[in-house]
Image (tube, rainbow, N blue to C red; front, top):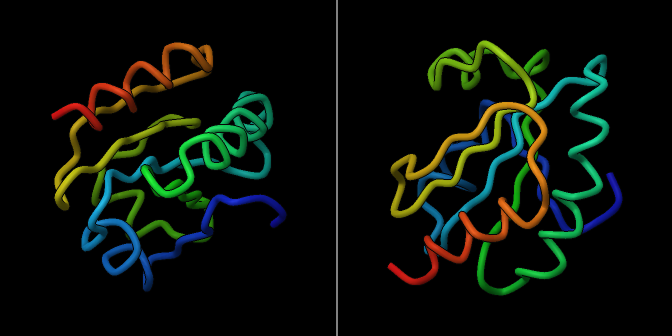
Length: 110
Protein backbone atom coordinates (compact mmCIF):
# COMPACT_ATOMS: atom_id res chain seq x y z
CA UNK A 1 0.00 0.00 0.00
CA UNK A 2 1.35 3.39 -0.93
CA UNK A 3 1.45 6.20 1.58
CA UNK A 4 2.59 6.72 5.12
CA UNK A 5 0.02 4.55 6.92
CA UNK A 6 1.46 1.33 8.36
CA UNK A 7 -0.41 -1.86 7.56
CA UNK A 8 -0.89 -3.87 10.77
CA UNK A 9 -2.05 -7.44 11.28
CA UNK A 10 -3.11 -9.65 14.17
CA UNK A 11 0.55 -10.55 14.70
CA UNK A 12 1.93 -6.98 14.56
CA UNK A 13 -0.88 -5.02 16.27
CA UNK A 14 0.54 -5.18 19.78
CA UNK A 15 4.04 -4.06 18.77
CA UNK A 16 2.91 -1.41 16.27
CA UNK A 17 -0.10 0.03 18.15
CA UNK A 18 -0.27 -0.95 21.80
CA UNK A 19 3.45 -0.46 22.47
CA UNK A 20 3.83 2.72 20.40
CA UNK A 21 5.30 5.73 22.17
CA UNK A 22 3.10 8.23 20.32
CA UNK A 23 -0.68 8.32 19.80
CA UNK A 24 -1.82 5.88 17.11
CA UNK A 25 -4.77 6.27 14.72
CA UNK A 26 -5.99 2.88 13.50
CA UNK A 27 -8.31 2.57 10.51
CA UNK A 28 -10.24 -0.72 10.76
CA UNK A 29 -11.46 -1.30 7.20
CA UNK A 30 -12.39 -3.90 4.57
CA UNK A 31 -11.76 -4.09 0.83
CA UNK A 32 -15.49 -4.49 0.01
CA UNK A 33 -16.51 -1.44 2.06
CA UNK A 34 -17.45 1.65 0.02
CA UNK A 35 -17.28 4.10 2.94
CA UNK A 36 -13.83 2.67 3.79
CA UNK A 37 -12.64 3.69 0.32
CA UNK A 38 -13.91 7.21 1.07
CA UNK A 39 -12.04 7.39 4.40
CA UNK A 40 -8.83 5.79 3.09
CA UNK A 41 -7.43 8.87 1.31
CA UNK A 42 -8.22 11.04 4.36
CA UNK A 43 -6.37 8.60 6.60
CA UNK A 44 -3.36 8.76 4.25
CA UNK A 45 -3.46 12.58 4.32
CA UNK A 46 -3.51 12.50 8.12
CA UNK A 47 -0.54 10.10 8.10
CA UNK A 48 1.44 12.64 6.09
CA UNK A 49 0.28 15.70 8.04
CA UNK A 50 0.92 14.14 11.46
CA UNK A 51 4.16 12.36 10.54
CA UNK A 52 6.45 12.28 13.56
CA UNK A 53 3.58 13.12 15.93
CA UNK A 54 0.93 10.43 15.38
CA UNK A 55 1.42 6.95 13.98
CA UNK A 56 -1.28 6.00 11.48
CA UNK A 57 -2.13 2.34 10.86
CA UNK A 58 -4.63 0.37 8.78
CA UNK A 59 -6.02 -3.05 9.67
CA UNK A 60 -8.08 -5.14 7.23
CA UNK A 61 -10.81 -6.67 9.42
CA UNK A 62 -11.43 -9.58 7.05
CA UNK A 63 -7.80 -10.70 7.20
CA UNK A 64 -7.34 -9.94 10.92
CA UNK A 65 -10.45 -11.14 12.68
CA UNK A 66 -8.72 -11.77 16.00
CA UNK A 67 -7.85 -8.10 16.54
CA UNK A 68 -11.14 -6.87 15.07
CA UNK A 69 -13.01 -9.15 17.48
CA UNK A 70 -10.91 -8.11 20.48
CA UNK A 71 -11.88 -4.47 19.93
CA UNK A 72 -15.53 -5.19 19.11
CA UNK A 73 -15.43 -4.00 15.51
CA UNK A 74 -18.95 -4.58 14.19
CA UNK A 75 -19.03 -1.90 11.49
CA UNK A 76 -16.43 -0.46 9.14
CA UNK A 77 -14.88 1.94 8.82
CA UNK A 78 -14.11 2.24 12.51
CA UNK A 79 -11.31 4.62 13.50
CA UNK A 80 -9.68 4.32 16.89
CA UNK A 81 -7.04 6.44 18.54
CA UNK A 82 -4.79 4.64 21.01
CA UNK A 83 -2.62 6.44 23.54
CA UNK A 84 -0.21 4.62 25.86
CA UNK A 85 -1.65 1.29 24.73
CA UNK A 86 -5.24 2.20 25.60
CA UNK A 87 -8.10 3.14 23.27
CA UNK A 88 -8.77 6.84 23.83
CA UNK A 89 -11.25 7.62 21.02
CA UNK A 90 -13.52 5.59 18.73
CA UNK A 91 -15.55 6.82 15.77
CA UNK A 92 -17.61 4.69 13.42
CA UNK A 93 -18.42 5.64 9.84
CA UNK A 94 -17.23 8.37 7.51
CA UNK A 95 -16.18 11.52 9.35
CA UNK A 96 -14.88 14.82 7.99
CA UNK A 97 -11.14 15.31 8.04
CA UNK A 98 -11.56 18.37 10.26
CA UNK A 99 -13.29 16.25 12.93
CA UNK A 100 -10.55 13.60 12.82
CA UNK A 101 -7.86 16.28 13.09
CA UNK A 102 -9.64 17.68 16.15
CA UNK A 103 -9.59 14.26 17.81
CA UNK A 104 -5.89 13.81 17.05
CA UNK A 105 -5.02 17.30 18.28
CA UNK A 106 -6.91 16.58 21.51
CA UNK A 107 -4.76 13.49 22.12
CA UNK A 108 -1.55 15.37 21.39
CA UNK A 109 -2.43 18.05 23.99
CA UNK A 110 -2.96 15.59 26.82
